[in-house]
Image (cartoon, rainbow, N blue to C red; front, top):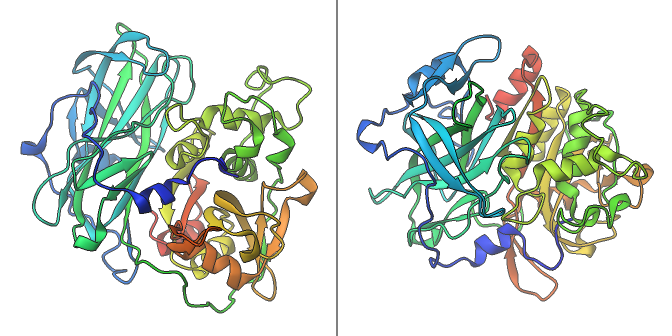
Length: 458
């Protein structure tokens, strides 16, 4: 479960005012607005009823279509972008260690993507390999519906390991019209009608000077959405009875372990869920990778997931893109953050063998059998019963055996998809509106590819 003493990011988003100041774009190259190329691919234009727009760059042609300054596209089974000849060298002072180091860098900037759905929120995600001595930064710059532009916003500074930099989000970014809340771009006051109508992403790859090593980025993109305010959603009819066999791990068995990572297991719902799905797809950690974990701790892979999803600015393991990026560090896996629109979408994925990690918040009495309330929690959806109820691996369980839960369809559906709710004090706060992580093979089967496309992910 998320940290009880702090509001969820969605609660912060709902209460936000335009008071943040524009954040640093980091030591990346200068703005490339004047040479921007417009993206002509609109994967979701045929699905205008869906209030979500996903755009991801994954193919060799995609990488070739961007603006490269020191990067180059690489072909192969899994095309990507790497450092070719560095564009320059820049100093970076890690705010969490206070250490300053010089890094060679190169940039790749996407074409301008025009959103099929002008958005109130956007969340970037990426999949990459960052060997020791390398890291990356992802930024977003957009255009508003009033014709003005956002600054370059840092959406994350990330490395798979923690020996070079401390992976981090960047606080205090805003321009009076929008703000960045950990991992989410948000319009400050959607009631004004202002929306994000287009954006570009800029990827900056870093390496130690004088070396030949490089990050490799296989997937980069963002989900933009304009989900209407709602306390309830229409009930859906059951359409699938199927359960996937997914490993079960409890976060609660790790209470008190490694408190430097958000106080230990009580707050590890996100990495615990991620590890369950990673292992469902066959991802395994070696003895060497787990050697740092106290040998007396059960399920050391959960401790590992917490450490390597931890956001040192957010001071938690629940950064959504960092979890998707962690999953993609396992061979043959990729991950994205998106929003789904219904339980029918989840049924489509489950039928193709793809479980989902969902984000939700609720009062104890709103979800029968949960036994707890939460301002923000992640669990995995692994199937549906014959009557359509939701089968979940819920990490907020006393032990691994208790992780499998069955939740009433109507209760669970409304909790997950709503954007507004009442907290225990009777105050209106926000819900996640269908946010989920999807982890799936780098080379999906035709059936998996079709299911992903049906929910807007390519």
